[in-house]
Length: 165
Image 1 (cartoon, rainbow, N blue to C red):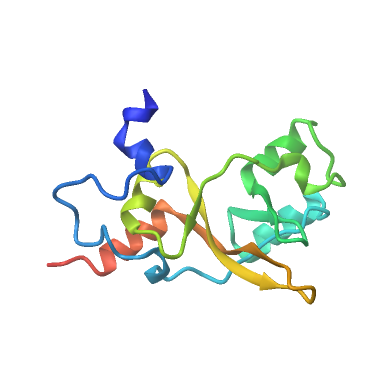
Image 2: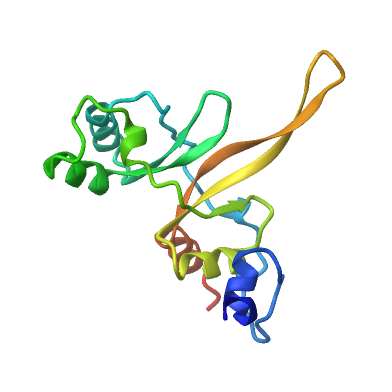
């Protein structure tokens, strides 16, 4: 059962640490990764424009975020291209038609150990940070800000550059 699987428990925030002998990088925070600036697409961007932007910027995927700040999902270059070529969507369709709505999020304050557990099953995680916003009527709310997308390659690059010799 996934409820007694330690890696599932860590990924979903129920356990902090279970590994007895952790690698040197296990407790380092995600914010220490050298992530590139956040790059997001708005939901009304067409599939054609998304393909052009991803190719021009050299990205394989990008989060799709509503103007309100709600993270709608992830769009990947390969899924968008294959969906268009298969005739499932048109170039003019909004990118939301090819957006994956199942994705993992990780916070800037979370550990690389937790990230490692997420990346064992997922190709990427969206790096988020909760920001408290206050309105004029004494109302406040928390908004998640996207700080980027992290992949196993990002983690591997960090570990190999700083690897203890």
